[in-house]
Length: 467
Ligand SMILES: Nc1ncnc2c1ncn2[C@@H]1O[C@H](COP(=O)(O)OP(=O)(O)OP(=O)(O)O)[C@@H](O)[C@H]1O
Image (cartoon, rainbow, N blue to C red; front, side):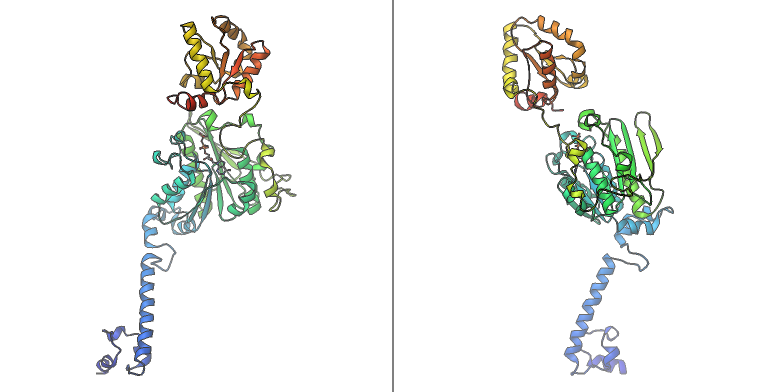
C-alpha cells in the first residue's frame, strides 16, 4: 500500500503518517531529504505547539480579542445587554491615570482594576498614614508608612493580575505633567489641592485627554467630567481664578466621613468606564453634587467652553511649551503637595517655647500653686479640644479670642503665681496669631508653644493622639 510505503521511508520519529508535515510536498521520504525534512518538521511542530499554547492562554475564538480568563472574569459585564463584548474589549485596551491614591483614588483604582482597564497608572508621592485608613481602602495597617502608589499597586495586583499597572511614585508637577498624562487615554483627578487640580486640567487640555474630576470633604461630594466632547469645559472655564487659600477646606482640617470619598471615587470609576467603553451618557457639562446626610444627589448644568479660557479658549495662553513654565504655586497661593500648612514665623523663635520647656513651666506652676491653675490657653476649634487637650487648658478658639478678651483677663487675674500664659494650637501657627492679639491687648507674658499639640505629642507625651 502506498501509505505503508511512505511510512516505511518516512523520517525517524514520525509515528503517524497523517501527522507527517512532509507528506504533502515530498511524497515518499528518501534518505536525500531525510535531515532537511527532519529540521523542517521540528521547526513546524514547534511552531504549531507554540500556536496551540498561545491559543490556550490568548485569544481562543477568532471573533474577539478576549482570552478565556478574561471572558470568565468579566462574564457579568459581557452578559449585560447594555454593555457586552465590544464595550469590554474597549475597556481592556484602555489606559487610565489616577492622580492621588487617597480617599477618592482608592475606590476608583479598585473598581478600575477589577473591571479590567488595560493599563492603570497610580500616581502619588505620599506615604500611608494611620488616619488614612478609615477611607483609603486600598491601603492596609501593614502598609502604614510605605508609599501610597506602591500600596495601591499591591491592592490592585491582588485583585486582578490580568491588567498592567504602572506606578508613579512622585508628585505631578508642571515639568512632568505632559509626558506622564500623554501616556494615558484619560485622567482621574483624585488629588486634594488647587495647584494640582489646575495643573491636571491644563495638561489634559494640552494633550487632549478627558478628565474625570471629583472632590469630597466633610459630608459632601462633587463630580464632573472636563475636557470631553466638542465643547466640554475645562476646570479653568469654570474657575478662571483660584479660590482664596483660606476658602479651600481639606480633609486634614475639616474632616471627612469616610464613605463619602468612597462613593465619589466609585462614581469616578463609572465615568471612566463610560468614556473608555463608549457606553452611556458621560457627565459632561454637568456636575453631580452629593449630600451624604440628606442622601440626595443633585445634577447642576454647567456652561460650555469659555471663549476667553487661558487653557482651552479661542486664544489660549497655555500650550505644550508654556505649561512646564507655569507657576501653579504663585497662581493659587497654595502648595501643590498636601501636607501640614507651611509653619508661620510671626514671632521670633527666641520668644517662643519648645514643648519640653513648656512642660517644665506647666509642671512647676501646678506644683507651686498646689492646685489646678489654668495657665494654658488652647486656641484650637472646640471639636479638636474635646478630642484631647492638656490638663487644665482653657479653650477659646482663635476666631473668638478678640471678643472673649474679658474671659482671658479673668483667667489671668485668678493666677496666684507668675507663670506666663502658655498658648497652644494644633501645629503652632494659630497660637502665634493668638499671642500677637494677646500682646496687643496688653497681655505681654503670653507665649506660644512651637509645633502645637502635634509637637507636644511627639516630644512630651506620646499617649496624646496626633490629629
Ligand atoms: N500633585 C500631586 N501628585 C500626586 N499625588 C497628589 C498630588 N497632590 C495630592 N496628591 C495626593 O492625593 C491624595 C489625596 O488624598 P486625600 O484627599 O484622601 O487626602 P490625604 O492627603 O491622603 O489625607 P489627609 O488630608 O487626611 O491628610 C493624597 O494621597 C495626596 O498625596
